Length: 87
Image (cartoon, rainbow, N blue to C red; front, top):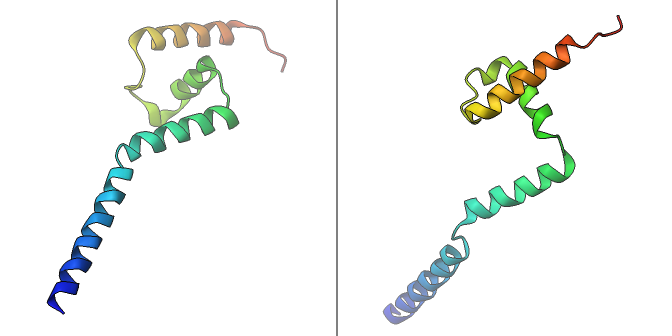
């Protein structure tokens, strides 16, 4: 009976190792899949996305964007706001 327990443990250990090997870089795979799906269903231009981020008070510091992206977006937003609008 002792031998069967060892064999069971060995089989379980082998199974767990297979699962672990299969899960290598799982976070990276999930991120890639989510990125592809989001890009497909919510295809928003970078300019529009950055303008939305600048106007969103929750994105106060824009730490995800480079300085050149922030400057470009602010200039683009200024141009949009200068255009005459119908009221």
